[in-house]
Image (tube, rainbow, N blue to C red):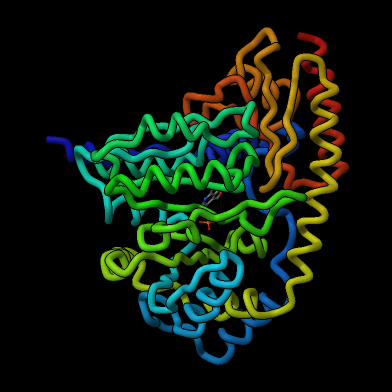
Length: 389
Ligand SMILES: Cc1ncc(COP(=O)(O)O)c(C=O)c1O
């Protein structure tokens, strides 16, 4: 008899960005030149004072196991940061620390949902949401994001999807993959409707500091929400710390123990020297964040108009994150084929809308975490390819 894997693990999805990166690398290994716009990570170094804090902590011996919920000093710094930026009181005892924001997506679903429960999540959206829901045996309920609403959802549609079976509502703004934000009025409608249900809210705000002229309000301060909201933020995007694997969340009292147990069962704790770098990031100078966002804005201001110049492509201006999400429905080939051919024929790696759900298949996601020169080159290649179709 052959050993087998579980049905649950077979239900796990994956992240298209990593799959396309692998294909792009394979092409490069054959000598092809590929422009990388597929992966969602800042192309900046971790700010030096943050890196130095991590190195100093290693030198001083902060290299052992530590508290599963997080070092008190980081939980306090994170609570203060969330309280100040979202305008809500946050008890440091309700803040947990994990290896990135990602584990909180998975663990929140595992802690709150099972078979028969429904989870509403944005579509297009970060693919790990649906993957975690399927793994838990719960029912994924995609909430379409509407291009004509700046890729926010229609509150009426959310209201129609909510029921007593809804156990969790996942919101994300600024949003991956669209760069959209959720206007206050939509959040207020959402909060009022969610309050009538037994649903938790997972508010994924990992791009909260990366916005351009618009606000990306949080649902947490709205009436009745803090008690049911997992308010999630991280270091990967804000401080260019993707490889450090550090994230944090303020969670309702009832979830502190279940989530801490999931962490102790999986990773035990985040390395203390990583957490101390996190304290330096939150409490130290913030100029590097402002400079990074200013550079992202310059790129967005080049990329979006340039995409709109390409015949058959239209792109709305993203209010946050570092993604453009152009509509390619006017072109004679679909989004999947287009993304595939742009990689193999034009040497531009990007993602099709289908990597993010079923509701935006005629879109592409371009990460503009790449230099202006790289973006100019990419636009040149996309324009020539599209004109030759
Ligand atoms: C919306 C969203 N949430 C969470 C994450 C995970 O971030 P982290 O690196 O902190 O695990 C990402 C990363 O791409 C993301 O786009």
